[in-house]
Image 1: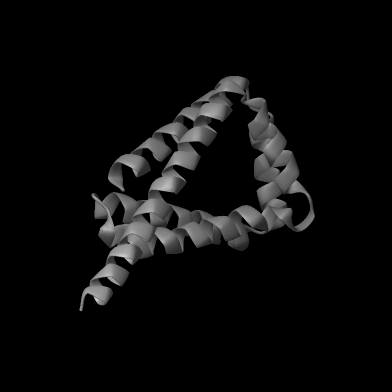
Image 2: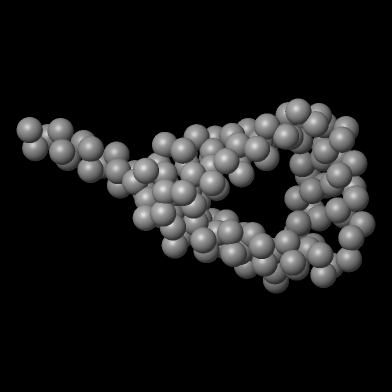
Length: 135
């Protein structure tokens, strides 16, 4: 009987730790982007090449699954579930829009002033902090 509880507790801890870890990584990305907004442009250049454009889509779909599976174990289910929906929507959009349209969008973003990239960095940082708090 105790073995079943131990397994359930370990599963609960794994999903909680996974979601909290994703929040920490996203927050750190926001801090790095805030300090070095040029890195966002470099990442855009990296992902625009060939089939790499699909990697962020795959990552977002994987994160959506993690967030959906772990949401019920978190402090604020609806925040984690909504974050999963954001990841799912973003991942699907990358595949539905296709590489050429995504490249055009990235080109447009790269032409924007550095202030826009700092605002994006603040949004990323805040999103990560909300995930950490809600997990």
